[in-house]
Image (cartoon, rainbow, N blue to C red; front, side, top):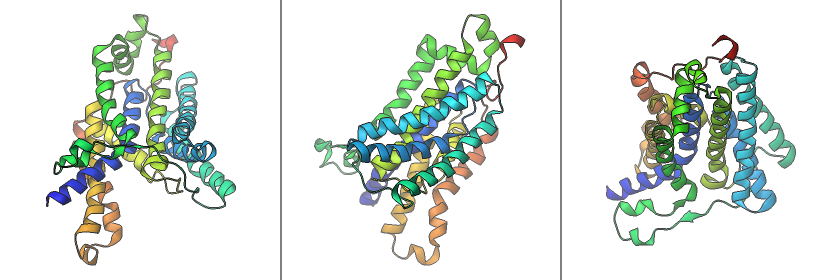
Length: 310
């Protein structure tokens, strides 16, 4: 039993970074008042360009930068449409998802003649040798550096929001942008910054799929994890620790699915493989359905700010 728990914990930490990074990026964007519906597309762009960058340079950290740059540019376009032209943020986010879906499919087939890229280098892992003799706790060792960055990031964002002037300005812009503007806060600049940084974080999540979880880009990526990240933002009530908890829940559900398939004999005889594959998504959506009525988004989320009408 301890071995099973240890395996689930280790797998949870391996699967958590993509959703966790994207959820924190979406939370940052929505805290500033811009709906983050394009997370799925940003993650897909990043996963592809991170793999391409790694193959071209042989360095996964440079590949990570390439992936983050692609997602950041998509986020900048979303911010430009939503802030400068006050376009519908839902339509803009859907457009990013559709363009990424079709565009990346075309590029991967044109460049590699397949739906997958070839294998590449991956981000290194952190070994904690002093934990090797401790049952269960040793599952914390031998995980990607991105895992530890993802776990520390909620702490940093919490400190940003509630212990710095910049964080308080971000919260004010997401709740009452007109009042913030009267106090001299540049609402547009805050929103641009939050959306672009949120895109960079989503890019880290997408890159984690292709240069950390796997060693290549696969055309099914990110397999709906961008939408799960958005659900984690809602379930987490737009807070860093809440989004982190929801992302870890999804990762644990995914780890449980794999654990059941590999460790429970005969489970596939009475549960079809499709049911097991859908298990993490179903558990996440059921959890979300139980809490969505009690979750309240930032008051100005999705509402364009017009400086001439404030």
